[in-house]
Length: 282
Image (cartoon, rainbow, N blue to C red; front, side, top):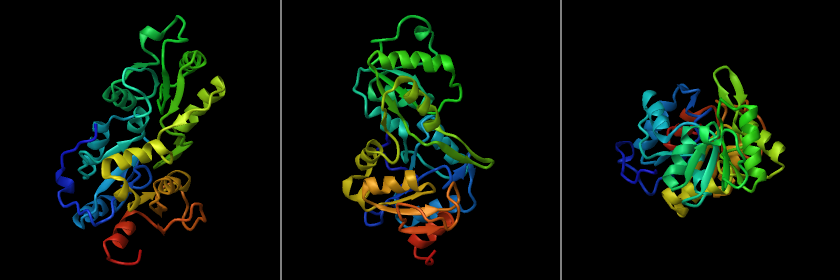
């Protein structure tokens, strides 16, 4: 699923320039509305030789939908989008049967991995005993979440299926404030089943492994992670062993004291780009 072809957007990728890992919600956009200055910031970073990767816990959309949404705001992104669904798919084995409580992005990633995904609302899982029929239940953000789906998935988990969450973000930012995220939905499955899930997305190891696979371990460690959520993006930088730039354009209020302590704390992505491109001290 990761495009190995060099896209036009990164034709000037310089191995000596640190890779820049960008969260999407709260850094590049809010509900697909570009944050002022973010589009030019990505262009400036690329022009300066930085490889830019979009590392998102959004698992609902397919990679192509993510790329198209970025293109619509003026950011080419072919081959540069990594999602928590992709990280989650690395936790299954080819041939495993996966009951999906998530969006098209999860279905796509599991299929690409060689698994056999079945949506929770598929007619084949309506009625009948689900115990023993699935190897994995994978949960991500899905806006058609309901009690019946939760009940069927719980039956599969209690029947032996492993529980994987694409991410555990409680909320995500929109122009109208924060709304429930994938982690809020995952919590219902955890409580109902009594099972501790394996989490794939930021800040956990599966997403870090995905980044290392794409850019290599050394460049991953030398990267800078730009995010708006210290408990997700900041801890992900810690997992990778790389630097963390906190921006105040998302969920974290300006000048908030946070842990882990960021290496850079600035208003927005434009300020990060200005700093990395040597146009100021941000």
